[in-house]
Length: 252
Image 1 (cartoon, rainbow, N blue to C red):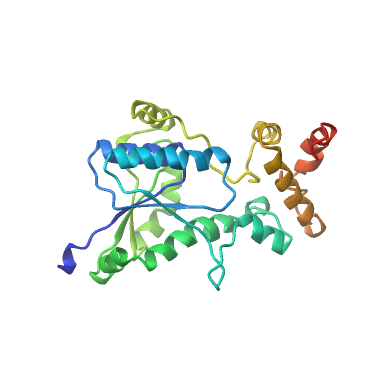
Image 2: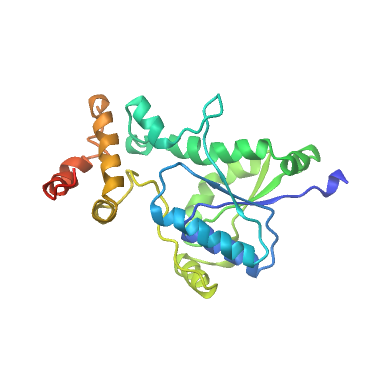
């Protein structure tokens, strides 16, 4: 019957909170029907490796696999965030204080998938909302507070914040992952994210010089158009601060 249509979905980010969310949903015997991971095409190598680890855990625990979605052009070709920045001669929008890259490459592809996914269509046709689990932890109440009114007004999705309901803060999330027999996933972000800290940039340079080179190339490509920021570091250029030492090693 149409009235019985129901979908519980998780937007999986590949980091600590969303991993703990999946572990907790299994522990609390809350069914999950759909798990989406929006791939910008520029995640750190440890995140891509962890997707395979998580997929095996999900299979072993009778949960659905991770469905990877990504942004496409109008003619259906994949468009990564790196390609978009290179084509437009810009940095990721977060460098300028905006969140368009997240909207276009994370939220957008997931919504597009759901719009064409028959089980979701059936829920909406029945006049109901798809339940979307969000992985904000118990220390992030300020984040859910900011979007509360928008959540309530959303005609398509009913948002639920289980980690807050369970009282799981960051430390509790990490313990739950460990207790589930999983390794820690590490931080999830693009390898050229302007929000990366200095030690993370240095780690990228020293352990993934190929990715560091691509980040510098993206910064160089955008430089002629930069007016309000200096580079990927917003107030400074990655190349100026970290690239010169890198070049002395003969890696440039």
